[in-house]
Every structure is written in C-alpha cells, then in structure tokens.
Image (tube, rainbow, N blue to C red; front, top):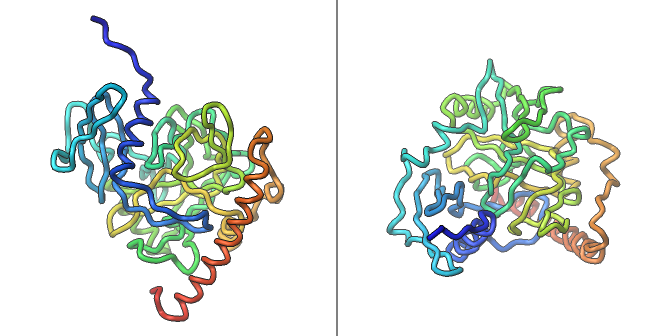
Length: 317
C-alpha cells in the first residue's frame, strides 16, 4: 500500500503548535526592546523526530502522528543529539557565522527555509530592502547585556558591515562584517567564531515588516507563524553562545524610534525615505494598525518609565 503524502509545512505547523502547548510563548505587548525568551525551541524537523535546543544543548525528540494529532515524546525520552546518521549539530555541519580573516566574519543574516522558534521563516522571495540598507548595523545581542539579565545602557556596536558584500546566495542573504578590535564583546564574538559558537539574529523595523499568512500580507507579529514576506534588514546582532545569553529566534522587529537611535549612536545616517514609507496591506489592516500604533506608544512610554525607575533604584547593573 502506497504511503499517503502529506504537506510538510502543515506538519511543521502542527508540531510547533503542540510544542507551544508544553512551552507557551511569553505574554507581552509590542515594545521597542527585545523580550527575554529562554524557552526550548525547535531548530530542525524530520519525518519522525525534531531537534530541540534547550539552554545550548540539542536534543532529539521523537514524535508520532495519531490521525491529525501530533504526539511529542515526554521530556524523559529526550536524547542529547551529539552526532547521528540523520542529524549533526550546527557546530560541525553548518555555521551561520564563519571567521574568514583577521577580525572579519561571513554572516548568514537571513537564512532561507529555516523555521525559527516563533514558527516563522524567510525564503528567497523575502524583500529585505537591500538598496535601502546596504550596510546593516552590527549590534551585540539586540541591546541585551551579556548574561541576558538586563539591557545595555545603549546598544553596543561591535563592528561594521562591509559595503558591497550584502549578497543573496542559495542558502540566504550573506554579508561580511569587520569586528571592532577595541571592544571586549567583539573579542568574545571573534573567539566564539573560531569555535563555531556565534549566534546571529536579524533586526528590522516593525512598521515595515510583513508576514504572509495564506497568501495575505499582514503587519508583522512576533509569535504568529508564517512566511516573512518583508523584512527591512536594518540590523544584525551577534553574540557568543553560552554565558547565560539568549537563544536567537532568527529575527526581531523593533519600533522605528529605537532603530533610529541605534543608527544615531553608531554615527550612521538613517535612510530618510523610510521614515514615512508604508507597505500596501490591501486595506485589510488599516484600522487595526492605528490601534496597534497607539498601543505601542503607550507601551514605549511605560517601558521608558520602568527603565528610568530601575536606574534610580539601582535595579540595573
């Protein structure tokens, strides 16, 4: 009897939904800064098991399909995935960041087809606006301090993208980065790159980003599965794995004022034509977008007030 065919993308959705029942995403409002998320996440999917990364360790997790329901193996049956016939850890098989010279890295900033911990992915149709952002900012861990216990006073610029090196290749968009030798975090990244242990995540601008859900473009929302159709590549974050740092979800969208501030601190002009740029959503999200922006302003004000209070009371170190 011939084996019944199934849609691979639907299967990944089912697995992601079942996994998030065990490890629900954090609840938060849109904010101009990243939210800490140390949940286990699915980094690869196969026909009868998934690879889950938890606190820097990769596990092979079997699953079965019972009718339309996905059943994941209990935590007690997870096995550390060091080296198997079907899967080899990223460390030895595939590197998103490679040391290619003296303090120079080749960075796969936008990987094609790799579903992240939010159930989102890029493909070769994703518009990263390469003409507007030819040299994306290079930041340490999206402005999160080493150890992921607080935010940096301001995002640390650890290097520069090399003009003319942003290129679309078979596996995604690559760019060459030169690290700043005078910055300690840059040295940590370079040391980790030589061991194949650098995390990379891209940052965009929330009002420009779009998700493709069933052929319809909607405003970008974190934690909503779908193909990322528009992602202005304004920032690339690098950091060493371990040291209590966060796990990358592949990308993070920040509000426009936060991104402008990072460019200002780096001494790089922000593309002026993007300040008022909008993308057609076919009329489907206009009213919702007005409400969302009003809520974002409220959250930004609250976040600023909280950070100021933390600094006054010594809650941030």
